Image 1: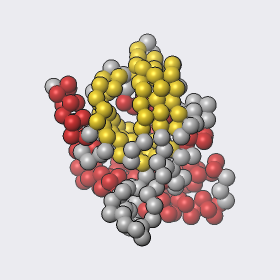
Image 2: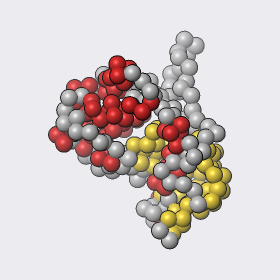
Image 3: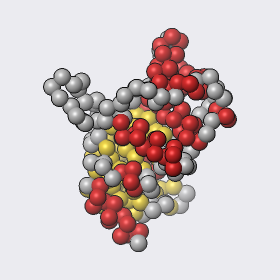
Image 4: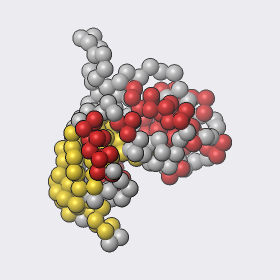
Length: 246
């Protein structure tokens, strides 16, 4: 299994440069869906390497992630990802930004692991050889290259989650968005995924009820009724969330 160095950890003069981060801006963003307000005038600048998002069910967490990737368009205001508008330039944004859904079955399409990764890469203009190399490298990076020829329906929930993550990594994104990545995993697979996430050098924005997953993040947002009610260090944000959820 490849060794993954955490972003910003243990860097010295001879180390490679820290991976680039994107700047994601929310300018008075509102989202109204099915007669309810999912986001209500959110203004943010997200540029840190590790950003967490917490809140009760229905607080707008998943909607916020989906506006970043262009799956949900704002009803008012604007989102930009390094200057690109996800609503109008979704393909360009998704070349640098990947979303791991809560349920990996929502993003796995083909019945064989290697075929599914190749399908996710085919629209990026790479040759068949480079597509195959990228898929193999992504599986190897997560230590799951042995799954390449396996059928999706034979995999455990944890293995499916890693395959879905490999599909995102194969594109070499700058930013990874995670929507409740451990909610459907048993403790063993939860801990495995948590260790892998901790070692990823990419910029991470993570929605989670699993508060321990966010404990060492640089910044954590607390959402309530579509609004950001706290924005700060992880320990203070988690304490705020627990008190408000009380």
